[in-house]
Amino acid sequence: MTTDLVAGLTVPTNLLRGGAWVPAEDGGRFDVVDPATAQVIADVANGTVTDALACVDAAHEAAPGWAATAPRERASILLRAFDLMVERERELAELIVRENGKSFEDALGEVRYAAEFFRWYAEEAVRVSGEVRTAPSGNNRIMVVRQPIGIALLITPWNFPAAMATRKIGPALAAGCTVILKPASETPLTALAVGALLAEAGVPDGVVNVLPSRRSGAVAEAVLADPRVRKLSFTGSTEVGRTLLKTAADHVISSSMELGGNAPVLVLEDADVDVAVAGALLAKMRNGGEACTAANRLYVHRSLVAEFTEKLGAAIGALSVGPGMTGAAVGPLVNAAAVEKVDELVQEAVARGARVVVGGQAGEGPGFYYRPTVLADVSVDAQIAGEEIFGPVAPVIAFDTDDEAIALANDTEYGLVSYVFSQDLARALRVSEALESGMVGINRGVVSDPAAPFGGVKQSGIGREGGHEGLLEYTESKYIAVDW
Ligand code: NAD
Figure 1 (cartoon, helix red, strand yellow):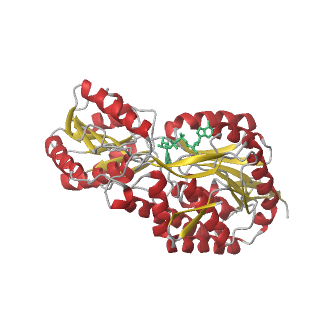
Figure 2: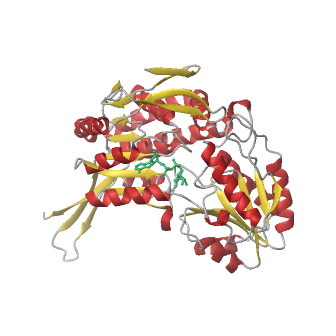
Figure 3: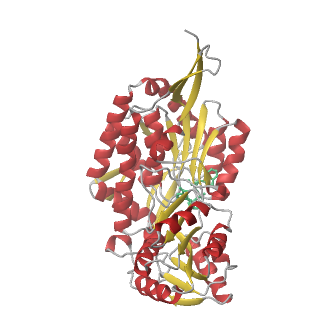
């Protein structure tokens, strides 16, 4: 079964298992909804535990052949996948818009970013190195080789349905692993389209299996309990990440976790306000605020806060809101629950004394809209400063000293990314080093780069994706003691 939802792109709607597109064994399917209209636009196979284990069988069967495939050949296939993705970037972007809601411009940016993971890991596939050391005794050599870790379960969220999948599939395939991808139930079509594209690029049957399922918990448990599975790579909420880590612990499975964020923006006393506003706008509004890297709390030096808030309010207030395919800058949120949650956080902050500079309420339906919002004078204790907003709301809080800003920024269980604005690089670097986050952007609102190690500290995650580090997550080092 397929859908022609997007002109020029036929997307399979069954499971991809062992190179075949098959229905769920019980025939079950689930709906995909367009957040701009609240209408059902497609339905896809709803994988069962039996389907999941059949995917493990397929991945297991394909594993020795893929691990033995020359790195150069694996690289060529990934490069073909990169080319195909770039060729179809507009169609894939439209597909993302239809099931996720984001603006077309954001979706196009995502497809290009997603494709880059195939190119980057095609280049990394031929550079997996080992090491030879001399033992301290001088009597023998310590040889370390890196081997594919084995079958990997990849679980991805709905907010970047293409990029979160390729950020895992790229390094896994480069390292020689076979995978089962379980995409988010809100956005399975993009994952299925990526699966089809990889097959077209020449990925052998069973190397990539795609399993949409609304039974995420049961499916993940069954796959992780299978002793042939050696890796879990999860991107999603900290809450689900914790649950999965417990399951993984029962089977001692290597786990990479890309979890929630609560990114602080620090606009220091000597910042260029216009640069800070432009950076904060990007960090906040890219993907309509539905990003783990989204600016969640804006700490601005008291001497700049009035000017900053006014300028940010004007910029955010000027953003057009509407269906992603109409050219609007901000699309709908993913579902009605997301709108409700964002509004609750805004109303709680207002009840604690925050002032609405712009926005402050849901937009008009039938889609799931929230008006781009700036809140001033937000209390440091407001719920909105402690929780992931995942929506187009920017809470601004004034501070007096760098140390105070650092303490506020670090006062959270999360530690994914922080943003610092200052014209004094030494000062910005000093602050960056004191911030408890896996990534810091200085004078810029975007840090994501396929060539860089992306990931968090504290409860934002374990491990890194992207860069050279991302590939190592799919390898196991083997030490061979050698006498010669
Ligand atoms: P989510 O945790 O609800 O779901 C993520 C994935 O896990 C989905 O595929 C879902 O179906 C699956 N899932 C849900 N319950 C499960 C269970 N019990 N067992 C196994 N799988 C289960 O997250 P979401 O709402 O899809 O995405 C938003 C979250 O993802 C945010 O917290 C965001 O910060 C985070 N995120 C993090 C990064 C990062 O790189 N750190 C990137 C993007 C999104």
